[in-house]
Structure formats: structure tokens, C-alpha cells
Image (cartoon, rainbow over all chains, first blue to last red; front, side, top):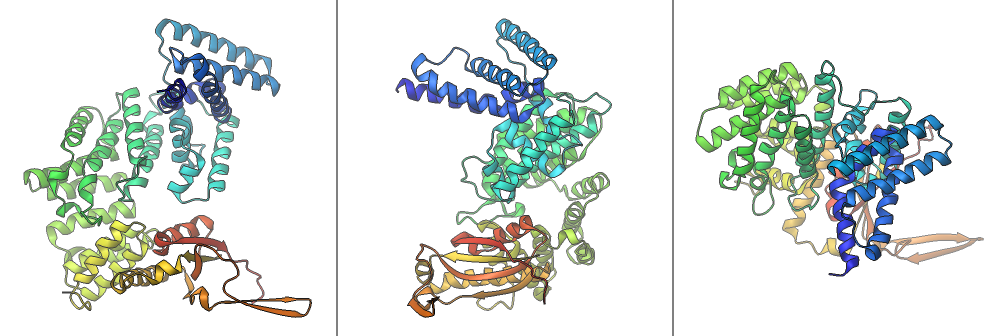
Length: 417
Length: 118
């Protein structure tokens, strides 16, 4: 391998592994995420110019940090930022130098940055994109594609959110214990939104799966905040769901619902990891929504893997979840769980009433669940109508293939059975 | 606000799809229209005939020019459209992403300017 390739690879590796750590560190000093990203981008460009000729430094991350910091100081000088701020910046960077030389460990401020990105002053819908960009280095284009927003609009929203962090003096810190639960929930929700964004699309072959990145964010958060049950609960939930990923699509790519999945294709290592995290979380104080949702997944695993009739537990867990998160989506899932015990007929009236909620009218899983329950109850014409709506709202091939087959199986379908 | 979803696809490839598979796509398009209707987002839709039956007309200083074929020769041709109601561009994009035609072609999303003079 040429030294050019080697330096490229070293820069690449440093980029992926330390991008978020370096952005977090630099912006926690300046409170200016955009300039931190710019300075870091310049540092990476300098690395790609210099390393091929001069060799890769012993501590690439430290090298990148030193260059980026110098750029930051230069640009704040150019902008005429006040002297006290500059002194502050220099002082802190000297401290960091000292710290780096003694321990060679760069302090990890990523969680502090995540708290800044998910601050109450920041609009909820931009929190996840902001975390994806600052911690993981996703481009605005990639984030826009995942969130179905025009790239220019996403870029503009990200810039605006970063300006807000700077202007409102949003702190880059883990909140005090008293404020922690509420603030932590916003961070965890942002991470989970990154996970579920991908989960909705069954495609298993995309290389940079957003769900992998979300799990990684969950792991980072769990390492840096080890004493909060919900952090572990969220990681457990994501691992439970991810463990079934391979079993969720059939050989022809169509979606396979939980009850029909081949459990031999579940990832047992991930399930064990999730169970262990849940056990840890249960020993801690309080039970939040993510722990409850993880417990529901665990109950599904017990039912499918060990033949335990966990249906009443699942209903009871949904009841608790609904008191914590009283949304139409949780109400829907609770009704589906109840139908597993009582049969579809018992819940269909409530399912229909739920459909009056405007937020469900174009919610694909609602129409799919409604159609499946109607089919189960033998109400074939209504089932066809609901499943057709679900098909029309589907965005991925797996769901389309599954629903088309389900519609064809309804009695009375031309060419069906 | 109304938006036009302009469906572009390779019409030669399209006409080579076996009938069985084509029926599946047609069912998907039908379902898509039903979903739009349920959400009160449907305004209009129509498929267009192939571009080899198209003509372009241009009047240049009183001289009329008529030519065979589409206005622009491109790899993908305009093959149909939907007009939908949506709150904003984000929502219109969400609907475009649900359109099955996005999987075999490309959808251009354009806001329709409301002249307010109905």
C-alpha cells in the first residue's frame, strides 16, 4: 500500500472514529458548532495534504485537534471576537494540551454536545438531524434523504439550529441531577428517532444503515451516563428490534411479521445483550417508556423462543406504556396486543374510533393493522379497503409485496384463493 | 396548496414489463390513489400516451412549426402526473416517496401557483 493510501486511510479512520469527539470538544469550548465543524473540516483537508508526505502522526486525533484549534483561534481573531474570549480559548486549549500529554486521552464531551442539540430551545424535529451531523458527521444531503426533506431546506434548518445554540448560550453540559430525567428523555428520543427512521424501511442491504449508527449512539450514551435506567432501556430496545432484522424479510424480499418469523434467523447474541441491559436497568430506580418497550420486546422473545404465553404481560405492559406515552400509536399497539387474547372482533370498534384521529389518517401501520384485524374477523370487503390504503401508503418494496399477497389471499379477490 | 407530481420513467423499459408484473404495479397505483383519497389529498391524476405519439408546436414570428416527438429527448420521459393537496413541500415529498412510480422512475415535485382567480 502506498503512503498516500495509508495516510488517506488513517485520516478516514480518524474521521469516522473521532469526528464527533472532536466537534464536541471544540464546540464545548466555543459554543459554536458551525465554526467547530468548519475548523475540523480544514484540519482534515490539511491532514490529507500533509500526511502522505510527512507520515501519519502518532496520535492522529491529537494532531487534528491541534490544527483545528489553531484555525478556530485564527478565525475568531479575524472576526474580532473579544479578547477575553480568545484568552479563554487559549487557556482551555493549553489545559487540554497538558491533559493530552499526560493521559493521551482526549476528554469525551459527546454527550454534552447531544444535550446541547436536544435542548428545549431547539425545535424537536431538528434535534435528531443535528445530532446526526455533529456527532456522526453525516452530510446535510444524507440527512435530508433520510428525513424526506429537500437538501437545501435541511441545510438551512441545521444552520439555523446551530446559530440558535450559539446565540441562546445553550450550555454544553450534562444537566444537574434534578433536571436530568426530562432533558435526558429528549436526547434518547432523538437517538430513537434515528433508529426508527431506518427501521421503517426494511431494506437490509444499505451499507450505512442509520439504525447501526443509532445503536452506536446509544452505546456511547450508555458508556458516558452509566447510572440512568432509561439509557440502558433504550439500548436494550434497539438491540431487541435489531436482533430480528434478518428474519423480517423473506427470500423474495417481502416483509415477514413477527409471528411468522423464523426464530433461527434471530441474532441471539444481540438478544442476550439486550436482556442483560434490561436486567441492569430494572435494578435501577424508576421505569420509563424505553424500559417498558424493551420489556414488551423481551416478552415477544419469551413467547416465540420459549413458548411462554406472555400475551397478558404484553397487554399489561402496553397499559403502563399508555399512561406514560398516551399517543394514538401506543393506543393502536395496545389494541392489537389485546386482540391476541380476545380476538379481533372485540377490538375492531375501538380501532375504527381511533381512526378519527387526524394523525393516523396517513399512518401506514394503522391501516395495515386495521386491515389484518378485519381479515381475521372475516370482514373481507372492509379488510380489502384498509389493506389497500396501507398498500398505498407503503414506501418500501417489502411492505408492498407483503400487503399485495395478503390482499390476494382475501376471499372474493379475482385470481385469489 | 396544490402540488404536481410529475412521473418520469423509461417508457421503452416500461412497455417491456410482462403483463403479470404490470398488473401488480397497476394495483399499487390504484392503492396509492385510494390512500390519497382517504387522506383528502387527492385532486387529479392521469397517465400520458407514449412520447412517440407526441408533437411539439412553436410559433416563430407568425410561422408555425410542428415537430414529431417530445420537447426534449431524455433518458426518462414524462409518463403521467398526480395533482395533490399538501400543507407544504415537506408533505408533498412525503407523498411522492409513497408513490410506487418512484421505485421504477423519478418524480419531480412542483408547487402549483395559485392565481386565486377562480
